[in-house]
Length: 301
Image (cartoon, rainbow, N blue to C red; front, side, top):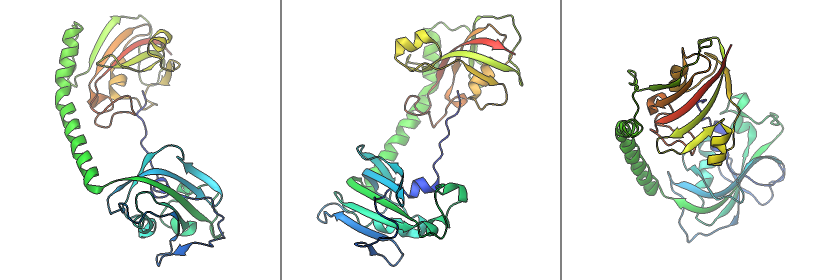
């Protein structure tokens, strides 16, 4: 399994809002001393106002002139925390908003480019052309700074509980399933259900592996086995083919299959420290989740 990349450029983090407006026509907009253009399409001044550290909830779109870069219109989401960015320009506009407001903000693209690497700007950006990023936000709700801090504290408490409970969960799984194999020094179990007799997995060799991955409670999160996919309703993937040492896999997988011969069928019980750790992976693998992989080494070349 590849480690999932969790990448977000400054551009995405700082420019999540925007509008359908021409880059040269700023009629109807006001401008702050910092150079931010803004226009409110709806104002609810009697409702809760955005404060430093709050998290915005609602819909937003981002556009460079007429080109849409991102939009979640039709899906209410948590948008962004309100923190200073880009010399405070967009931040200044967000702090004007109240729950229920709909506003449009615009920033000179050349100004934003000063804070980014060239490859972080959209490919259609041209310096010196007067282009602007437009942001449109429909602010449906606000998670206040204090509410967000409480959420974070509760989340950290849950994560600590999961971290502490993990060894007991693995021990219970091993006992329940009658596992006779002993873990290595890192806590990895390699259970050989069938020993192959072909060439062995080694650095530089191309291997093809059929697999099914589950959590300890049996929840399946990934598989290349058609029968398992039908059982779980997952979209089935092709068996994984890779050159050992040239692909970033979770350590438990790499170590578990190393030295095993073609034709072998294994079960790996992987502690989270050799899996996805404190971050987890997507919505299906929570932080501090031990993993169970049923693996067949189809070929080694």
